[in-house]
Image 1: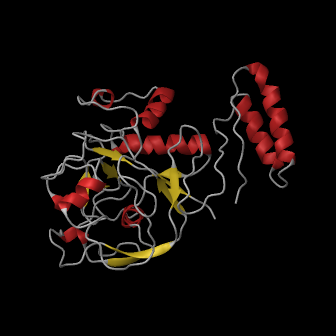
Image 2: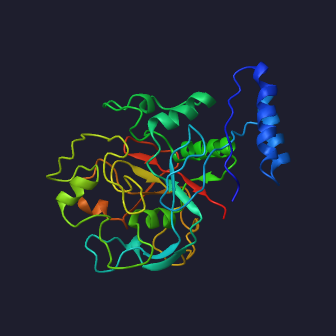
Image 3: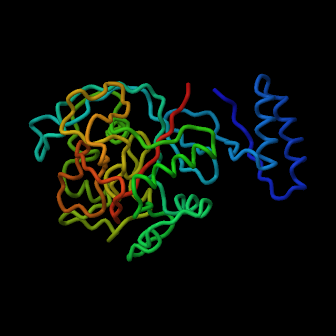
Length: 315
């Protein structure tokens, strides 16, 4: 695995030589990587390279990490396999949730520990002078920087992950639908089929997800700060509830022919994009089922939809 790197922030031209000198010393202590790291540091210092030098340490399943100060916190998913979709006997099951099929996960993808926050996305907006819908800045309900970013499109999410990739030198992207469901189910091998990510009744839902179902008073009238509810076994928060999450895949009528390796599937209607996980406005418990699928046009945005990032991890 590539060794961890220190991060140097160049505050003025006078700092540039000091940065290169310090980095040169560090490179000489990491045999085999010195020339490449020295070159990156020099280019970055004089403004010819926009890659930020990451500082993520050893990456292992369940251990959160970041690649840069502005980057979302990530969690590596373990290898395993799971049964994707829902059985025909499941209440409220939709036709696009079947047939159930086994998917093998290689343990080479990390997902955001949380949904991308307003503060994290705002850093991208500020640095790139990106124009956003007024709703992004003022959704007409109280929130702070720790709430999930909303009022953004699938294209906004795509440009954000491209920005992260450029800053870190790592491959950030939106998760595939299979990666998302594996992360939400949080099981390395199939076992007793779980209808929900947690529990079976409305009280379980109220205690574990930000939703609007009947008799649910979770303390949040709208979106909630990310991490307000307990994580699942893999260490991911809010995979169900809070906001719907944009996925890379195109929606399909069913899972006939779906990939068995967890990869992105674009065999459907790519004028739309899959969204998963349900949001804070959900009066029907069936929307909170892990297998429930939705879609939204890539140019559409609302106060119920955000996203969670994925990152490919090279072994």
